[in-house]
Length: 517
Image (cartoon, rainbow, N blue to C red):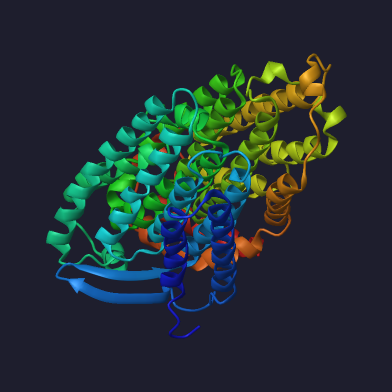
């Protein structure tokens, strides 16, 4: 792999295919999009196979100085690697989900998806501050079009709300970026991650970045765009929105807020904890009373991403590893749940839960896979989400008993609304003849759901294969933030006092991590 620009190739393949699709007729556009996304998935497998776990922090680096203060700089660490692999894994599944569902302007639809793949990968491998910003913000455009052109009845309202919410928060981030470059004299992200900004400046910089990443996650109370976007988006749009785009907020915290502004991160940890606790409980209760399947899963995404934020700001290794594993697991499981909704929506053209019931009788294979993904969302041991949630809660328990109890309550509520959803859809009496007559999964739907089912079980049974590439980078990040957390840090005042500093917590977490392995 020495000298081969694999990251640039992974950016170019979907971009070129996307431009081509916009000029092709429907059948050729579908085939081109599927081939291009499968090719990029294979490149992702090659990237993972050639990643040196014991090697340098930044690998597969590329750099070309374009003009003063801006460079085309790419490179990944283990954290970025896992998120890129998640992205290229879900993209061909999204194209499969769209083969029959999208009937109009197929070429433009496929082009939008492929260009979005380029932009998503660019976010995770950009090493220049402004290059990251371009990828981060440009990703709004294809998703805006996907919702606004191919969405449901209220698609225009949902697309504008999505675009405005996510764009406005990022304006403050751009202003902060200009100030950072003027102060540090560089746009290089790895250099900025080690730069020590003045503590007072960190406060304002952290808040500016938080305005963008909190909306993207999305955190309560700036989450209201998400249910509307999910409900109106086509199935594949919901999959990629929940599976990858929400993870950009978490990646932003990991790449910018925590390492670049560690003192401010410690200062505002209490704010993150409070917002996350509210999100876990409130959105779980809202999910319990939903009648629309997509809206229920959308609210569950807000609750799951709140577990990510408390894990990130626990300031220990378990919390950070748990947050990353929840992001990966949620990307798989939420995507699969939206696909399951799409399967029956394509047959009956309604997402109302009450229109279904007893589907395990006439769709047993569908009911089996739907049950697996439901249990994974609940956090059943042996599935992907269990590992991440257990690690995240273990990390936050070292900091605050109260936060741990509230987040655990949210997980219990999550089991309630997901099992209630499954019971109403798959079990009970078949009340409607049209639902009772629906055929089981076809070959295309098997090809969509089976790979995700295998990945969910793989992550649950052998999480080490996902944790190993990230472990050194998470340890380095933890060392960076733990030394910045002062004695009696405000984040420790929530819940029962531990009587230990953040440094002691971090040391305890590392010792526990070594003992576990």
